[in-house]
Amino acid sequence: METLQVTDLKSFYGKAQVLHGIDLVARAGSVTAILGRNGAGKTTLLQSLMRLGPRVEGEISVLGNPTTDLSSDAIARLGVGYMPQDVRVFPRLSVRENIQVAARSVKSPRPLAEILRLLPEIETKLDVPASNLSGGQQQMVGMARCLSMRCKLLLMDEPTEGLMPRLVTQVGTILKSLAEEGVAVVIVEQNVGLVLEIGDVIQIVEKGQIKWHGSPQEVISANVLDRYLGVNVNENSKQIGAS
Ligand SMILES: Nc1ncnc2c1ncn2[C@@H]1O[C@H](COP(=O)(O)OP(=O)(O)OP(=O)(O)O)[C@@H](O)[C@H]1O
Image: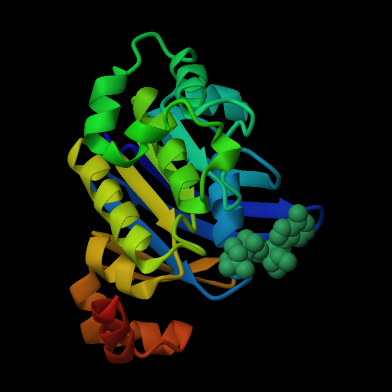
């Protein structure tokens, strides 16, 4: 059974149709990266999966459970973690409390020690209010919350936006280890170098449709990034190598 299966998803804001029949699968243990130009519908896709915002038609199932008629809370309870572009931590709560709140929503949360083994960076920040953390550290807290809930599917919208190169690499490493733990990771990402490095499957969205999908190697050999995104892979790889 696929962790996430999306069939013929159409999404609407009022009468405006933004997604036009998306088919998508995300498997346990893999990182699926969604690329596309601004306004292509990437955020709308993640929001549709969480039943936040747009009206949807089509079929979405998480671990075999149809979710189009569920609330976002019920979808989260199936084991879906969603990190929107503006990371949502509880700013006044400490890092430890942020993790505890997430842990309370499931029956058998992952022990803190195990979370810290995967995210050692936050160990020294456990008693610091989340608002005092940098954007990158807040991303880590978001991931810690997901880990504590043992989420099976993690949806992240531009997790590396605005982060320093060192943190970008770190976020990539963590996402890869989450996938190795069996999580199906789905990221919307503008950092093509990172996507090529950690993505198992790349999906290219244009005007609300998946126009192309394949492995990072196929992306490069088929030259699709240039075609759909206007990105020169060789130039981009050089930049990532430099970081
Ligand atoms: N709340 C909304 N109401 C109406 N239209 C919206 C709403 N949110 C997004 N849209 C429109 O839907 C389309 C897709 O937007 P979306 O934010 O999903 O694109 P995106 O690929 O995530 O872009 P970006 O890379 O800039 O974040 C755009 O034309 C946008 O203007």
